[in-house]
Image (tube, rainbow, N blue to C red):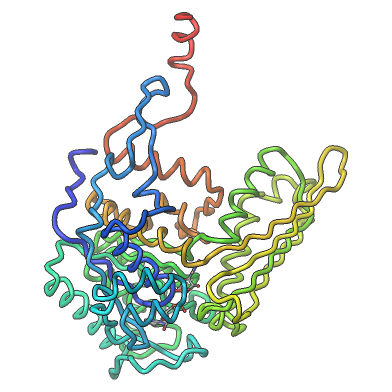
Length: 441
Ligand SMILES: NC(=O)c1ccc[n+]([C@@H]2O[C@H](COP(=O)([O-])OP(=O)(O)OC[C@H]3O[C@@H](n4cnc5c(N)ncnc54)[C@H](O)[C@@H]3O)[C@@H](O)[C@H]2O)c1
């Protein structure tokens, strides 16, 4: 397949609906890294290695040296927000990065002013920004977003564009008839159907133009049959949902380990306190419900209680998020895990993760943008399941169960890169060379 992957020539535009804490931490971070002020820690594309060939070959290149990815110097950022603050103001407001770092890159950040957003307050009650597009129909709004994308591409001389949704979590809705086909969806856009959310309008606009779209929030967005079909038609890579950071990252690291050793789990209580704008939005029960559904699915899919009812059949899983302004973006999570071992003897695990939400999320957005662009250049389209590694609630075809185990997700991601570059997939069997090594002793 190697010869079919187009090189990453020219500039890549990364357009972001939602220039809040996560997006501004990413943008400021990339600027700081470009200037040699810091390092891209937490980013697999920038700092991760990949094994190529047999263990005995000892080949572990950096991922960015193995696959053709856009260089950080060739990235141009832009985006939309319901607040008109430029990226310097928004980053200062988010209080994730210290003022000293932000001041060092102030001119580059001040230049980035959000475009007017597609916004509907009924989807996010706790926000009331005024930097919002106005039009008669949702179809007109989608057209305006398409114009934004094309104007941005031309003005910044971008060879390619990708979009990553970093906007607030929208209220919970379920897929309905209007989401079933491209025709019903487009009819719904013309008729201002209630169940077409703002994030779906951005996704529709992007996919229509063949621009890769990843969704970092738990909203349905592009996870509906109409947009999956459209992505196939326009050869567009899509993916979601909900960046895997913080507590769920820990859960998908730990749960596969307990499951691997056939240890039982009776209860998993997870609670969080956070005080940023994301926390404020999630303080509304309709918006929390979207997040809750995304967070709850993880354990069931890793543990498969139906296959092992003795170990996981009675598992009680509870997730809470509490808005607590004094903590700002420094989310604190507690997990109490009631497990049992040999002969049913009970044990407990406690995790208290004092994390920084946007510090964990920023490298995820960067990797997703770069890998989505790679997918497009490799001719891959539709749902990019190999990027499940980055999502709390990975989008799959409706007939497939999502894979939540972070280690299996990593194997899939790495094998996809090997496949793209025409290298052997790694099965970890090793028998093909083990005997030779024994004989050589
Ligand atoms: N930080 C994490 O670890 C993490 C993990 C998983 C998912 N997420 C999700 O990522 C998203 C961003 O998180 P954040 O901490 O940056 O939140 P934030 O509140 O700081 O930023 C979100 C921004 O989106 C804007 N916005 C809302 N609706 C919009 C629309 N329709 N168009 C354009 N802009 C819009 C808001 O004005 C705000 O500036 C949230 O949905 C959050 O749930 C974050």
